[in-house]
Amino acid sequence: GKYAELMQTKPHTGSAMVSYVWGCFQIGALIASIFVGPIADAYDPQIIFWVCIPLAASIMIPTSLGYLSDERVPMDKRGVDWVLLNEHPYLVGFCLMMALVALGNAIIDLLFFEAHFWQMVYCVTACVVMSILAFRWLPPHLARCNFY
Image (tube, rainbow, N blue to C red):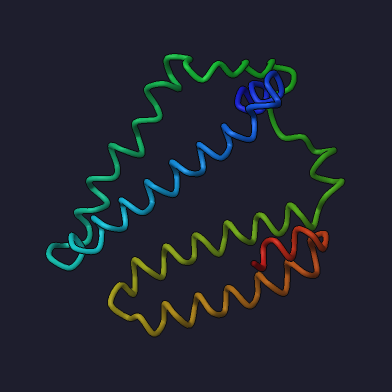
């Protein structure tokens, strides 16, 4: 995307931009955790989600106005790249399994909101299964990174 393109045009400052972005991300995560704890303890935790919906949706404004400067994909290049998917079936399978595990986690959290034991059982089982699949289906460097 445009982010990588801008980094290539100025390689001497590219790493500084990455450090700046991740630094801001970490500071934001720290500030969020400072506020979320007391709010979740004092009020209904769903308040946090309602407050965060407009914040998460705010990316739609610069995206729809074209501020991200990404080029549109030509019509003939859109769609599923079946050749690429057939080249890496295990990688695609792992990604689909991860999406399925995330969906299952959301369902478990919704259906068993107060049953923390079952949430823990699901999460531990999912972690073990995904770790085994990572070392069987992914290249070693990706498996180790995912395991970390």
